[in-house]
Image (cartoon, rainbow, N blue to C red):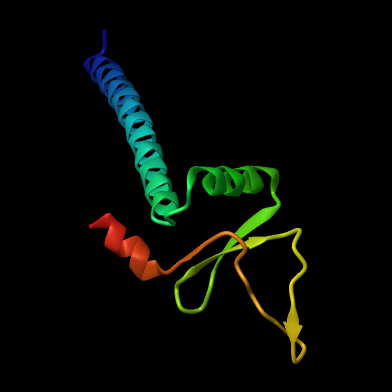
Length: 112
């Protein structure tokens, strides 16, 4: 067999093996990222210091789409009930969280 062809076939095989190894590594990294994100989500909800029933109502509302979570200008997180009518003062909306509110500082403190 031609030596150049043999060398090329060997190189192709090595490259395919390396790609398969990297794809497996990427799959493990994505799984790890998902687990770490889940841990951060749990930390965030635990830092709200809600009792069990309130936490269940909040999670149920998020899953049903009736509760929204927004980040305000100050870096705080505001949780709003989409079904609750919002009060207006001087033609400006007033955001009143119905379940809980935490600031970015509280989130950072919990991470340490």
